[in-house]
Length: 295
Ligand code: CO
Image 1 (cartoon, rainbow, N blue to C red):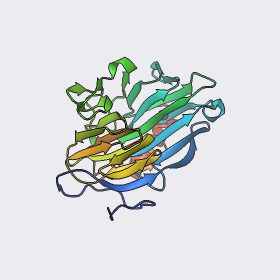
Image 2: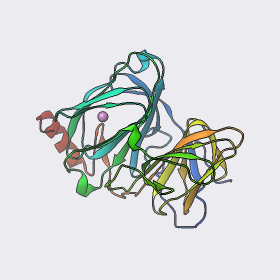
Image 3: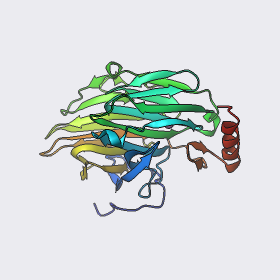
């Protein structure tokens, strides 16, 4: 496929007109090492130079380390306004708490879909000093009309995430969206997201329909997968091009990926650290409100 561009991209992804058929990668990018919170080492895939954003997705980080020093400092109190943070834990334990008295433990296999809305101040701190800590944080934008909505949590225990086994041999944890009659527990999100954890054994295949206008990506976090016929390896993200469905297949090696899609907002973005609004004035207001203790 001659149109694949591996490397830096400066233009945001815009879904092209419907062409039908399989959504092949429009772009395949790698992330790069970054540090956030009080010094947590992570791998930034969306929100870095190779893919600044993928409307409605603002950021995707993978954190994966079995060295306590890489994560022990955690993410002490920090604010958010104007978007959603989605944490999916593959391994490890993270304690969440906020300034409104909410607290919870994110453990292996759980998901927290947090709608920051008009503002929260929270912390995410590891509840272990060693051993593997592995997972993802995805930032999902909110439409202008919802940016000042009341904060909301969807804390999903591992047991509440259904496992689908569609024809083709893959196993799919359905966090948001629907696969083979299993519905993900995350609901009522403005961007109508799909969020699937897809494990494809050697020789197996997974086919999934996505709404044509939705932007989507496949991030391979173990092994390798063919995405619409293009090989995507661990640590690489394929931005899905136009089409009606995505096809993931594994050759001699198993692969595991998150498949995420959502409705683009096509609205202006004004971003300053943990505040994502539509205008600079709204950013100034967010900083003032935070400093005045109004979150
Ligand atoms: Co946060």
